[in-house]
Amino acid sequence: MQRAKRIAAIPPYLFAEIDKLKAAARARGVDVIDLGIGDPDKPTPEHVVEALAAAARDPATHRYPPYEGLSELKQAIARWYDERYGVKLDPENEVLVLIGSKEGIAHVFWAFVDPGDVTLVPDPAYPVYRTGTLLAGGRPYTMPLTPERGFLPDLTAVEPEVAEQAKLLFLNYPNNPTAAVAPPEFFAEVVDFARRHNIIVCHDFAYCETTFDGYRAPSFLATPGAKEVGIEFNSLSKPYNMTGWRVGFAVGNKEVLAALSIIKTNVDSGVFDAVQLAARAALTGPQDIIERMNKIYTGRRNVIIQGLNSLGWRLEPTKATFYVWAPVPAGYTSKEFAALLLEQAGVNVAPGNGYGEQGEGFFRIALTVDEDRLAEAVKRLRQAGITFAGKR
Image (cartoon, rainbow, N blue to C red; front, side):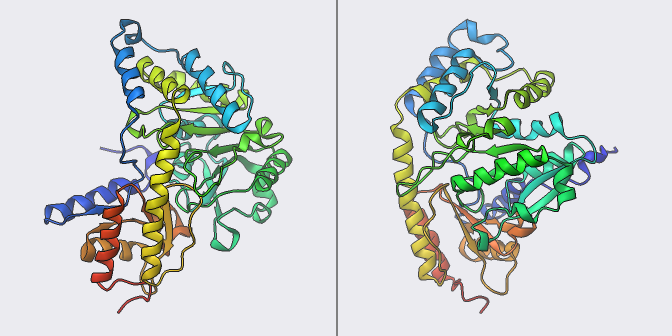
C-alpha cells in the first residue's frame, strides 16, 4: 500500500505519541500525573449543556446546517467581539463558523497555498501551522521565538526575498506553548509588514480569555488596518471548557473568509445546529466561568512556578494561557527530560522539541489538573532528586 507523498514529510502528531508513552506507563501500574495536553478538566457550564439538550430534541436541528454557520451564532460572535475587544464585525461576511479552530487553521492553507509557496511560521508553535503548510505542498519558513525577544518573532530578520514570496503569516498570542503575550505595538508592526509584502496574517487567538493578574489580551483585529490584511481564529474550547464540542470560528477579512469557505463547503457540512445553539448560549449567557477558571488557573500556576523555583528554576509568573514553559536542566534534551519525569516521577509533560526545533531545551506543563496533583508532581520531582541543577 503506497501512501500519498504529501504525508511523507509529516511527523507523528505530538500528542498521539505522548498518549502511547502514558499508556505504557499506566500499564506498568504508574499513577501518572498528566500535565501534557491542554485539555481543561472542569465541565462545560450547565446552561450550555442544557441549551444543547433542548436544541437536540428539536427535529429542526437534525438536518444539514448552513455551511457558513447559523446566523444566530454569527450574530452572537459579532456582539461578543464588539463587547470584549471593541472590534466591529459584519456577522454575515466577516464571521465563519468552524468545526473547532484547528479545522479552520488546517484548511486555510488549502485556500491560499499552492505547491512551493512560502508560509511564515513561528517556532516553537502549535504543530498544525507547519503541518498544514506541508499538507498543502507549501514551504514553511521558520520565525524563531526566543526568550531574548519575549518569544516574539523578529520580522526584520525575514529575508526580503522570502517576505515577497510568502502567502501567509501565522501568529498566536497568548502563545502556545511559551505562554508569551504580545503588546499592541507588535501587532501594529505586523500590519505594516503584511501591507508592505502583501501577506495574509492568520492570528490564532484560542487563549484570548485565559489571562491573569489583571492582564487582558488584545485582539489582533483591534489593531488599525488589521482587518485589511488578515483574520483571527478563535474557539470556545478554552474559555468555556468545550474542547470536545468542536466549535470555533474565524473572523476578519471577508475575502480571506470567503476563500476558506470554499474549501469548507467542499470538505465538510458544518457544525451540528444544536452545538451551534449551545455555543450561542455560551457567548450570550453568564460569563462568570471565565473569571472563575482564571482564578483556578492562577492558583495552579502559582503552585507550579513556586514549586519549580524551589527546585532551582527561575521562572516568572505567566500572564496568560494555562501553560508553563520551562528550560530543561543541563545535560538533557527535551525528550530525555520528559522521559525522565515519566519514568522516575510518574509525571507526564510535553517535550519542547515537539513544537519545533526552537523548542529544544524546554518542556511544557499544562495546568489542567487540580492544585493538589500539581503539588504532588513537585513533591515527586523533589523525592526523585530531579532539580534544575542538571544530571547527578
